[in-house]
Length: 170
Image (cartoon, rainbow, N blue to C red; front, side, top):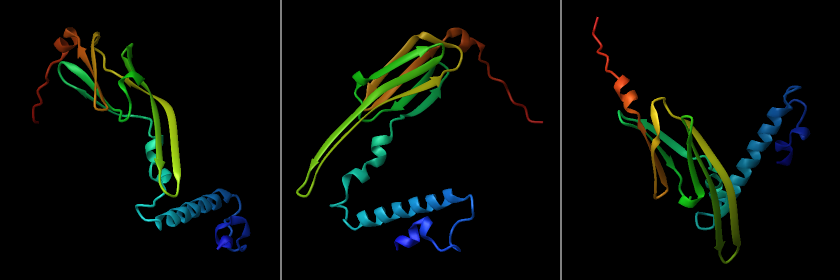
């Protein structure tokens, strides 16, 4: 089996064409991933290795952001689960809304056969350009249940410049 997954021990007919060593390493990586996935699959749901189950959770530091606009305001909503309000900073400068934060995660799990302690720390920031015509003095931010909502009012001048254009069929 080892001969099958090591690119330097394959028969000459099986070796990737010259200059294509990267494909051989990619294949080795893919097979090793599959080997570990199949190995840990046999432990069942109750005995699954916890660190592998939360792999995506630890590295997802860039928050999802929704931006919407009405006649009166621009609203930015960011999903920030597991982050405290005190770890957030929101700034608005020259039409650029910046959300910065720090996420700290620490968990400890003790079972009969193992003791697992995980710590992960990281900072993130998202910069969202806002449209022209916003009033930087009319900004409100609220944080509830891991969701940050920032509302920026539009200036009266920008609302006055808007006008609906009728579309006529030809």
